[in-house]
Image (tube, rainbow, N blue to C red; front, top):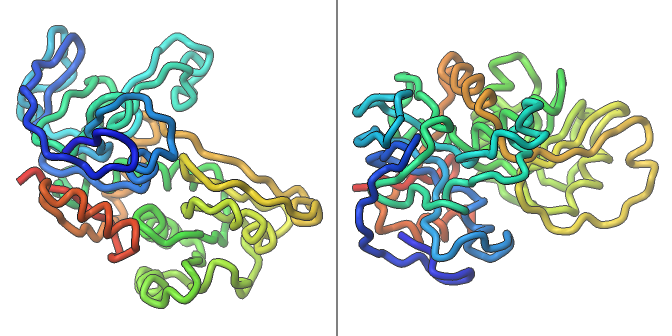
Length: 325
């Protein structure tokens, strides 16, 4: 299922099955998560890197071919392919263990074809071995929603009370991890979204309410998954002195002006960009230990446009996952 141009529906196309190049592997796709970043690409909110493009950057599958010099995996191994699909390896960011900020990155489903397909090519160095604890449907959402949530969680510091703004695919995974680690979680949803608020409470959130509501106690940190810049002043107002507001999305609407008093008190606003392979290894180990449940909502590959439409209108709790069948 390929995007011909921004603003258009995905089109079913039959492409020749590629052979992997040096250092690459070919993967028979079992499942691919549907991420809000896919919507940003389809809507043209992110600059076009390559068109047409096969979206999808939460890929789970088994390797069925190795390219020249590929030795890390064997045919039949099950792997995951995340958003960060490659880096230059020699810029200042790469050489200082900040590959997520690489000056010449490769992004799965954005600058190279992704997982809305029966087969995908990936750089073996950026594939992740997957725990046996998760089947394909439950593993796929961990590869972006889970990983970005985890990186944002790390940037929030040792926060005893954390607020999650936008309770979708990433927040419901992070809420489970935070609860398992003894943190108190407050969930902020679209105004009047009682279904998502009930869902948050069912996962152990101590409180759930509207995004513009005042929580029952000040937050040590807030993590914004909703791509609405207007939530930053609200999150700052809900955060205690010394707290951190983390913007976890790759795209966000403009941030409105706000009074300095909301930032004063050594509060911090910071963003999270992409992920690292270390993030992936750490998070997958923790996710298996905690037994995080991604609550997957399955769609067939031919239903990719339907899955995206349902994500856009918030039709489900959990995470949409496309299966290759």
